[in-house]
Every structure is written in structure tokens, then in C-alpha cells.
Amino acid sequence: ALLLSRSARPRDADAICRLALARDPQHVALRYLAAELALWQGEFARGWALHEARLELPAMVQRPAPTTPRWTGDPLRGRTLLVRGEQG
Image (cartoon, rainbow, N blue to C red; front, side):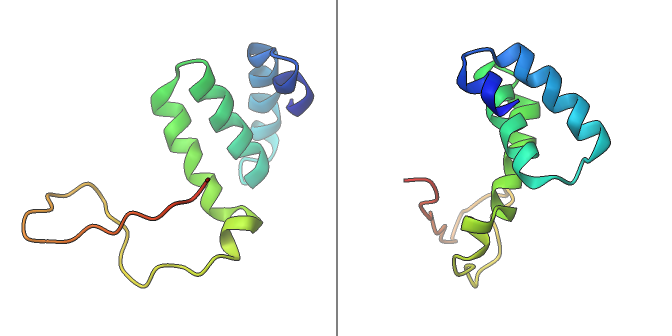
């Protein structure tokens, strides 16, 4: 799937990802690749949901976690939101 995605064949790569995820739905790197492919193809709801896998990738796990709770989209009136860079 990775080679197909790097060869600009996102539909083929996505088909392979879906098959592999059916066998191992907890595979973090595969979920992240599936997220990239879904976003690339305009499947935003699926892509953003799968994109949460990035937080389980070894490079992200090694970073210090914020000590504040994660924002869930609730109103911010009178509160502060910490925006943290992740991907450069």
C-alpha cells in the first residue's frame, strides 16, 4: 500500500489498506497511511477520523504530552486554547 501511494496510485493503495485493516484494525502505521490516502482522495470524515492514529506513532508518543486536557470542540468563551505544532 505504501509503494502504491508513493507511485501516485491512491485508489489501489486504499484498497490494499482496507484489506489489511480488516485483518489488523489496530495497526497504527497502516491506519495513518489510510488517513493520508482518504484525505488525498477527499474522504474527509474518514480521513480525519483515521488521522488520530498519528498520536500513537512512535515519534509522537516520545514527545511530552501536554498536561492540559485535549480540546473537544466545545466553546472557548473565557478559556484559553493551547495550539501545539505536530508535523512541521
